[in-house]
Image (tube, rainbow, N blue to C red):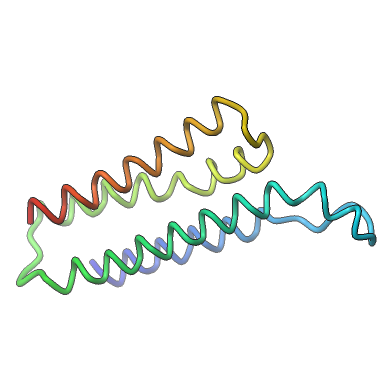
Length: 121
C-alpha cells in the first residue's frame, strides 16, 4: 500500500510539473504571465509533500493493513489525483470563484480523510 501510494503521489507531482510551461519570450516581463501557474504549482507541491509525509507517519503506526484500509487509502488517493487538474485551473484563473472553490474543496477532502483515517484506524 505504501509503495503504491508513493508511486501515485510521484505521478501527481510529475503531472503538475509537466503542466508548467516556459514564458512566451526571453525577457523578465514574459515571466509575469506564468507567475499564477507557478505559485499554484508551489502551493500544490507543498500540500502533496505534507500529505506524503503524513501518510508515511500514519502507515508506520499500523500493525496490519486490512481491506478496509486499502479502500480508504484508495479514496484518499482519488482526491489527491484531482490536484493536478485543480492546480492547472487555479493557475489559469487565479482568484476566480469556481477554480478556487474546487481547489479548496479537494484540499479539504484530502485533509478530512487524513484526519478521519488517523482517528478511525
